[in-house]
Image 1 (tube, rainbow, N blue to C red):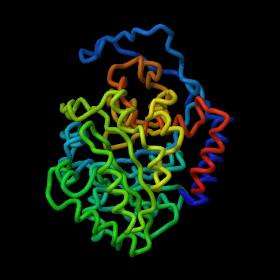
Image 2 (image 1 turned 90 degrees about the vertical axis):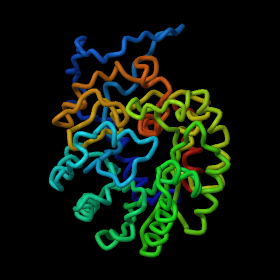
Image 3 (image 1 turned 30 degrees about the horizontal axis):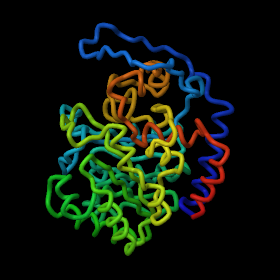
Length: 368
């Protein structure tokens, strides 16, 4: 199976339960759009049809918590916005209690520990253990360089995954992370983790200059280490990065991902068939930003993992004070070319714009 059975059934049960009975306190709209923001972009989308409201705008609930215990990192990756956006708080970190409180407050069935480099977090062992004790799935997103030295602090579990970031083979990956030798250390970390009994997946970001043949070469290379899966998504053009030429328009993305369905039959991609359709331009999905909320040293980041217009003290404030109808393609220019999994995989998981054949495709994909 593409995912552990407990993870799959737990996620399906959670989605069904919350679609039928979403928590009412999260559906209230308390947002106030300030006209005094000097950085606000005045934007009018020219279209022949009126923009439709999100089908789950009044049934909002989270799917994956993006938990950033710190933003400190040992690398300065070209496409990363965090080390620039949070430069003023780069040395700060959440306490273990703050992290676990956010996990409980949000209640999402999956937690993605990111950052920064989470293996630099002193209490990473306690954090992962706390998430496992709650019966949740956990992906620890890492550049892989500290896996070997932190393995002693972690315990293998069916619901715990190392998620190692690799953007290509050695030469291009090291170029993207702006340091030689990172690819080799990441591979050494993957081998050590697998040898110790851990589940390992990889995460690849696709840029305008990415050669998809090289990505297939990477996935083929990783087969020898028995990697458990791969996630892959187009890059988002952070305003903080200020390097627009490496990012893509939607047309660029459709072209870049035209063969992703074929790739999923050869390699264990953890990209759902519905999201694959979206990447290829075969169907539209609305952005479901509240499905992947982000919590970090400044609080609950709104509106999404990629754009920061506010930080909220509580998860309920994030859900009720974010003006959700002001975001997404056709509403905000920053969203226009975004096709990142953190905004659109939740829409696929929630069954938005579903087709009759989707359940059969999903079942076949999960069992492959």
